[in-house]
Image 1 (cartoon, rainbow, N blue to C red):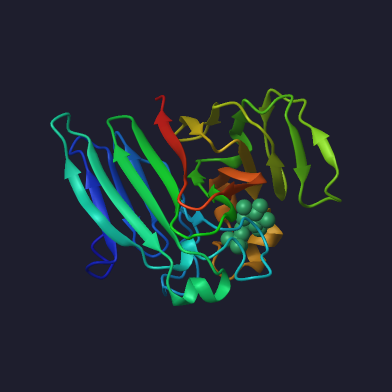
Image 2 (cartoon, protein in one colour; image 1 turned 180 degrees about the vertical axis):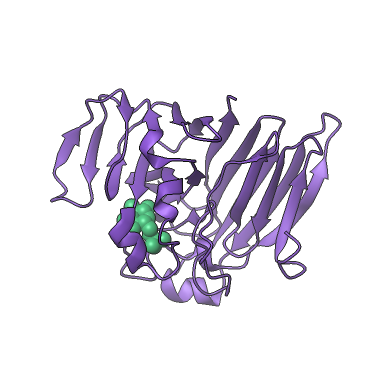
Length: 281
Ligand code: BG6
């Protein structure tokens, strides 16, 4: 990570092959390694210009998932510089914890006139990474939002990748008319441009991928009931200036969010949610 300017990234290292790298722009997790193996995808053509959202890793989507009349698509949290509240700190168990935060400022209030504080806590364990996200309403009025962890998982081969745990769920296909459908497959596989929002998923789902190296990752969520499965595939990847032309073969976005029904948060209250990645290999 030495090629990032000083102060742009923070590094969590257990010293046993488990590590995580976080860019403070957007609090974007760039890397999560477990037993030395990288599990996140970042496009080699991603812009790190601190203007455009980083293409890959885990950008934080808040306060709006998708197109937004008040500001940029997926909101502003992924394009704001976050503050380190607690630098990476190793506990007696060897786990490493860090806390980042973002508060409203003039720029955010110009788009979305609310006072808030976001707290993002990452805890790196031997075989897992726990990411807790809380939204504090520091305003005197109630606020509404959607949020999502836009995870780009790295896979060796998208054609041998499957997401399990989605069977029976209602979903909308954003590439179609938005009519609700129901998933019938035990294993969701992808062979073209995909953009689906699955509703009320179970707390644990799995991403299993073959090829070399193979991976098996459990995604455990709390208060993030919806799962977006996205892959731009060949043509759309080429249209995106910051997406490797062939990168779509090596990634799958499985994004845990609270997007189908927005959260309404009364003044002074907070919303807590989290996602945990656990490597089963
Ligand atoms: C996904 C959306 O979460 O993000 C897609 O469901 C979107 O519709 C994708 O294309 C990427 O968005 P962006 O703004 O990072 O290009």
